[in-house]
Image (tube, rainbow, N blue to C red; front, side, top):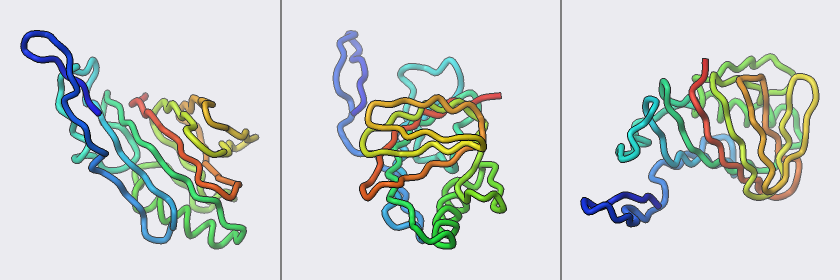
Length: 168
């Protein structure tokens, strides 16, 4: 849903619909990326139209933001299958990330952004080069341009909302 102001200054719900940009990469069953909204430039005009359908990749636009929600399916126990699945999303949806395919964890990547990761449901593990932590519904992780991966080590889908803010 999106709000707006009428010419007389009164607020209202302008749009009521699901995101129009949902991506499910072949080769990664259960993984779903929904791009919800993006802003272009800072400060952004509060009445600017959404341009999410023009977006591609992981990175937000220059001086902008992107809001996305990702469903992470449970990871495979087979290391080769995990590598194939990580590659399926990183090489199709998020080609603009820095991704070292030779890293021991196939999902490790870097974005040039400050990311607010908010766990909506399930449990997700944030993996760093040194250390990791489990995040549960309501937990928030601030990811600041670091090498990282996300792993769902449970039997249920983990849903995480991400706000990516362009960084330097």
